[in-house]
Image (cartoon, rainbow, N blue to C red; front, side):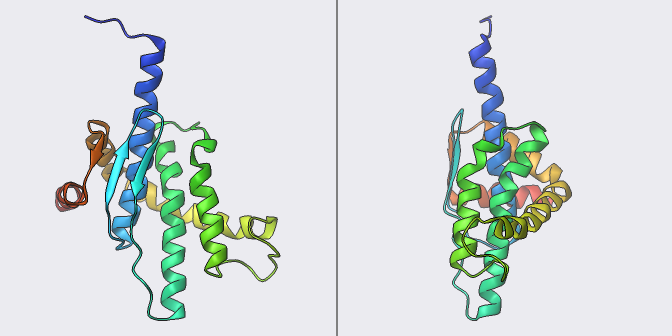
Length: 171
């Protein structure tokens, strides 16, 4: 039997964190009705290659869509914290940056905000992080099941994701 080194243990833990992180994004995207594509899982990073957001037919629908998108961006780190409560927040910096950029570009910020990522904007976005936390807690068992499935793979196609999500939510 091969003895595990500290490095391989850290990589295994990282891979679990990545699996939980990506599962959070995927479950949130799925629940919000976004189209799923491909997910890739590595030892230190993951990537959901595009949850496509349908174009909105009016301003109200567009606002609801960007709110859901921001919640899904925050759902990754919140799900990662299910596995490791002290997960490194810097691992989600691209999600945070995307939330700031997309929310600003779509007009999702308070009137008191003067620029993307200013204190007023970040305070406003925090409520979406809290919504993501609530969603993740509510769907914790589904996220755990999906994370376990993702952990055993390097990548998954949209067909595979929809199949596993159907099994998870139909059981």
